[in-house]
Length: 506
Image (cartoon, rainbow, N blue to C red):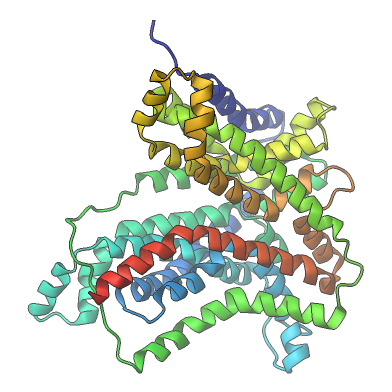
């Protein structure tokens, strides 16, 4: 009988736990209510419209910026990339909060500068905010596709008389279509699963209506809406999995050298995006802090956010270790890993709805820190698994075999050889989970124990009460944490950019 790796059993148990919320939703939705009611057509059309406009906006912003950062040799190129990808690290509900407060009659722009602006709400306002915080998906995937292209085809097209813009339109972009599609699907997935932006902008999407049904004690209808949303999410994930990048022979990347006057022009072109996505929220929160001060802000909220984030990160890392080893051990482990990735596709509001019902079935679990941490772990476990799996895959088997030959058992080999060598992946995975939990809003709203507030939920309560000035400190703290997340995300990218820049100088 073939011996199963020891990592299989815990990996399968964790995979089974990842399936639990979906099974709970089916149990909750099973009842006399119709699966699809007439009023849900409005929710469906609003959700699809928001997704479509978000994808369109993300592509229109992200593709030109990808061309700029991938093909044009700009001074301080890594800084440009970090600046343009920064919105990806910030929760979109911070941007929605700032837009809602800044624009319109009586908004902060009119009060401070005396400039009348239209109100930022509804479908168009939400689409603009979502596009500003999802275009980095398109930017990064398109940029990766552009950097992998062989520039000799463009040089051949140019030698045949095709203009530069003709080459970009007819040669470069068609070969980057898979990258553009991948980023667009990720932007669509984000738009489907986001709760804060549609709720603040008053758009009746699935996520907002699930929260409304939950507050009205309509858990069964909330479960029905959650399953319908999961169908849309599953469709997007399926389409994303079918997108394959076009492989080309390795060649020298096309490099365009701008004239001196073109660099400031490019900066002016990208500045509005950075101002709206980053500087506007930062400026609004700083304005509130200077005008209203910290007020009676309870810094216990910051500790609450830190505490549950550390707890969730620790549990996620412990769960991710056997999952990562199992994924590399064989087919069963890979299946368990793929099942665990379901949680990342489950929106926070859906995860919260399922675990609220589970808590009602198990009163000892209802509104406890344990069920809240469980939601975090199920949602963000794939981040830890991905980081640790990369480190484990890079291990040399000879070191493990040498330890076993010298008499070390499996546990001692893991403790003294494998774990120290994968520590960087463990830390990176835990840090990613920590940062995502810090800013998670819908699952925390539904599952937090009574009286337990985090920075994100406090922001939501401030929005509901209309005391926007009190959002200054938590907003700035969340922006700071988002900045740390961005630094972590580009830790490896900076080195690659430096190597590319040095290669171009040689």
